[in-house]
Image (tube, rainbow, N blue to C red; front, top):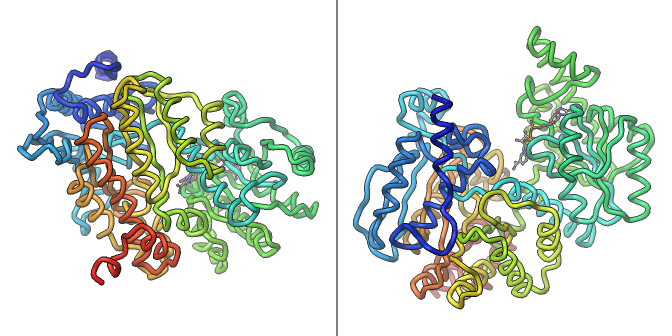
Length: 557
Ligand code: NAD
């Protein structure tokens, strides 16, 4: 079946160009973005319809995919298609301002919200795991990860180092799927990155794709090289082929204090994701198979030491944070009481952005022409002349990021800015400056669209980490505001039972109707994030709410 599905997948090419095959551009955009998610250049495993993130899928199975495509082709401009966990289940009469597609993925009643139940239902063909942007048809490849990491370090720089990482030494570990974005994100911010990685093939891969500049086997040599770059203020990334714990110990022995410290080994998975100190990669592979209990014991012992070292650096003034890999929790499980003394990256660096409604705004050119993205890049630079890190990101992205599938761009924009950009894109389309409509969306990791107590809503000021009304209100409100498609998911990022989150996509097709929708959706969508954070007691969010007329008190006075 794999072979036949493989040859079948080659028939699912994303339509390009200025002629549409659907009855409106919203339906056409949904069709193109669905197929773009499954493009072999974009998806991790298109034959299985898996887009990214373990088993995050775009459609439940090939039959469902065929039916979604057929449905989108006949869908009228006053109808809405319903998707239940990756399968189309109905076309209903709505109205032109309603979304063309409404999606619910992987929802389980809370009492049953675990992998066990989900797996059983999936086996029976009744469900699909939608991750975040996989099941909501707005994934754009690795650009999103690089940008998220870039934005984290940019905010860190704003908070601690006057907005740039120039002359700053940033130490981390892990050059895997997501961690591999760290060296590039740090040098894009002007800093020096010193990153430990145990597996040589990962280092090779990052060197080859130019995410990493140099690599050394000798720890001292790598430290010297990084210090040299720090002194000269040169942006440089240095890989070192060693265990993260060994690198931190050596830095401590040599009394080298980094400026920042984090870690992106896969500590969330002690058996398969983390190498214990004092084992070679070969020994580790062998022990994983032959004596997994022993391996896990060594991994835990190593993680305790790892976090202890991070705590030492933290006490000595190094800006230290957990990068969402659960490393702190692992050490805490083994009795390291102070493990949570340094913060996670969301409360430390992302939440202040959420308070301003800032989040991962992204768009793709439906024409398939990279020229169209260049036009939007220039427009963004023009619209926000004062935003230096935005300018740095766009310029670097143009130079260093290869498009996967439809040409796309991502950047973080806040309250007021998203609306401004969306309406300006609509004008680019109406005046013919770009060849075809632009589709605008975002990740579910955003200000008001996710409840995830171990990640996006960790440590909320008022303790509302697990309150999931917000993402549900977000989906309802985007539907009422007229987004082109809206999705509500469960379990993205952190797994079944741990998160509820919503997505939205909106098409700028140059019409008046689209302008009205863009105005409402791109104001309200980040707006609910601002309101959510203001409600939780964040002063910055309250200020943003008042500035943009979002505060309820202003309205009822
Ligand atoms: P991955 O498994 O692809 O890569 C992990 C890398 O760490 C591997 O290359 C491995 O060789 C290396 N490694 C493991 N133990 C090591 C050690 N002791 N010393 C040096 N290197 C070691 O994982 P990934 O996709 O890169 O993600 C890494 C972790 O970061 C995951 O836990 C992920 O959940 C987390 N993460 C979270 C977010 C977020 O948004 N919260 C973002 C990015 C990554």
